[in-house]
Each structure stands twice: as C-alpha cells, then as structure tokens.
Image (cartoon, rainbow, N blue to C red):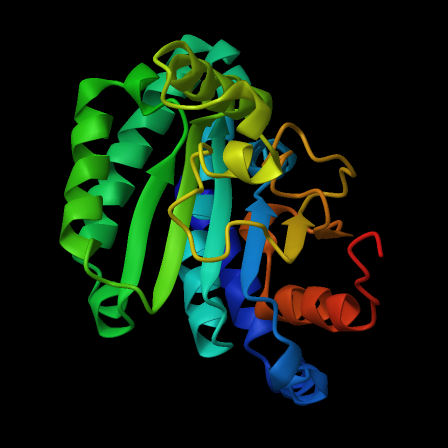
Length: 268
C-alpha cells in the first residue's frame, strides 16, 4: 500500500507541473460555459487493472479510486454541473471474490460516513443519494448511506447519486413491478401506461434531470455495462483510455469539449 501511495503521489505531482496546469487552463477557456452538461454519469472503470499493473492487490486500486471521486465532485462543482451519477458497484460485482467484496463494503461504509461530514459537501450544498437494490447491502452499509442522505437531504444545488448494488435491467424490473401492482390494485389503468409512467417509477425519478446528458467511461472499454439503460437513451457517450484512479480534470474537460461539438437532435 505504501508503494502504491507513493506512486500516486508522484503521479499527482507530475500532473501539477506548470505545463499540465497550463493545458488545463487552455482547455477550460475553450469550454462554452453556457453548454455545460447538466447531468454527467460516470462508469468508473479500471481500479483493479491499475492496481495489478503496479503489482498491488485489486482492492488497493479501489481505495485510490475513492479518493478520485472527491476530486471529480469538486471539478464538477467548479464547472457548475448540477447532477453526477457514479457507477460504483453493480449487482454483478457481488460475484467477485468474497474477500474483495467484503473490503469494498468496508470502503463504502467509510466513504458514505466521511462524505456526510465533508465540509465541501455542505459548503456547496450537495445532496447525496444512493440508488440500487440497497436492501442487498450489509446493514452497516445501509446505515452509512442513510446517514449521508439524512445529513444532506435539504440540499438541492448539486446532486451526487451513487449507483451501488445497481443494475439497469433490474431497475426496469423493479419499476414494472411497481406499475403492475398499481394496475392490480386499480390505481392505474393499463392503457395509461406510457414512457413517462416508467420514468416516474425508476430509482432516478426524484431527480429534476434524471437523464444524463453525457456518460463517461474510463479504462478504454466501450460499453454501457447495464448502467442507466433507460435514462441513457439519448445520452452522449465518451470513452477514454485513462484508468479511473488516474482520471484528471484535463480528462473531464476533454470529455465536455467533445460533448459540445455534438449536435443533439434526440431522434428528431
């Protein structure tokens, strides 16, 4: 862990050199502040691969990736991005080695409690929510999530959604079950079911802008991996080779610059 932390510190130092900072400033000036995406989704991929590349255990990549989440939130707040949805743990991830899952649960518990007391969260009025089949998580993680949500429940300026124990197809199944129950109880006529009906029963229904304008996937993989499959129907997709723990503000700015070159017609 000491070796990995040292490597990350060296990497961060290099990224703070004036040449990188200058490039960051130039990129940010090229961004049209009137066309910033309101909602960005992120598939945070590459934690384990980076750790293995450095000869470390997989879980150590996740610990560094958790630190990157804090940086990413700050960059988004600085750019006035309203909503972020972070894909942190899929339902399929429960199939990973037991030790890795257990350590990830420890990490989630720690991070949810930590973010509840983060001074920047309160300064910038960031609402923290978790989405997914949360009942599948250990009770201690559920309690940590509730704690963070309770501490930030009145904030509406920015929103950070953590997709944990999450699957896009399973989200649709859960929505359809809720709708079917209403039909069964004569609370809803089957002929009245439409696109809006389904949207209103998804985990993201509480959001003012539930559909991401931009989805970023790190690590070079180019697939959506069961992430917000209903909400991403017209999202712009951006794939970068950088592993999540190495993701920089430069990478975010590049993604937004690329997003701003696209013409969004929404099928029209």
